[in-house]
Image 1 (cartoon, helix red, strand yellow):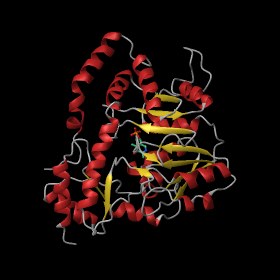
Image 2 (cartoon, protein in one colour; image 1 turned 135 degrees about the vertical axis):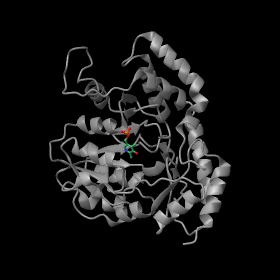
Image 3 (cartoon, helix red, strand yellow; image 1 turned 60 degrees about the vertical axis):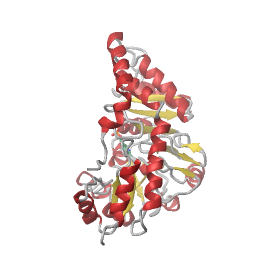
Length: 362
Ligand SMILES: *Cc1c(COP(=O)(O)O)cnc(C)c1O
């Protein structure tokens, strides 16, 4: 059986270092916002090319606090892709702001820059983009719109650690950018974890307070804050794995190349372009008969996943909140299938996946 993901195998190369660091944290007697968190924050800021990094409890919290820091008036509008994981949209709703959905480019699956301007009103305050599946958004036209309309830009980087656009790392374009270190992400912890990166000193100090009850001095609270702190042990694990992030990304790119070169044209594959350094958090293909294809692969010993089966605007929880129809997004959700592309997937396994796929009778 070729697995879709195996986190034990992914993390096995790090077990010795993980055991060492957790023993150190246990013996230190200091468990919240200590040396592990501040070390990981400086290492990740340096890796990504940002001035500041603030560790928080999850990717969703990183998005929520990025918006919260700006204190936009309730009812203000935030532009967001219709084709994303629900977290992006939830972070807007949970700030009492209004998500305005924009359809994707059907080839990149990312927000279509040409569709953004028509959605801007005098209530628009921010654009929240998502570098879906590990591919950067088309940043030049997006930055132009952000500057013309004087909007805040937030990047949801949860699926794209280390990806670049025209040689510049994602997470360096927006005012405030959110990462998730959920265990399956390219840089994954052994539990929940997230971070915000920024170059803005005010956003840095405010978000640092917001994650810690609105306080940077114990028992003095300046802002209405949250409890969303990155855990010391997770920060220790993340420092260890960060050293291997480029290697993890290279492995995924090697598997993606095998798929690109060996899967036939009955399937729509991710497009490649020299401006984009993709890190393939997910390698998806599109096929009209997706559900039968998924069953066929399983019968032939290959596990796959669907990212995602239901578009955000069709989710039960969004009834009455997300209005309008989003046919491009809906079609992607109906036809997309994610192939194994884990750090633990071997090149032989990827060859086998391609071979079995090509024998599918549609
Ligand atoms: C994983 C993910 C998140 C949320 O991250 P958590 O750490 O699970 O809260 C947000 N946005 C996108 C696009 C994601 O893939």
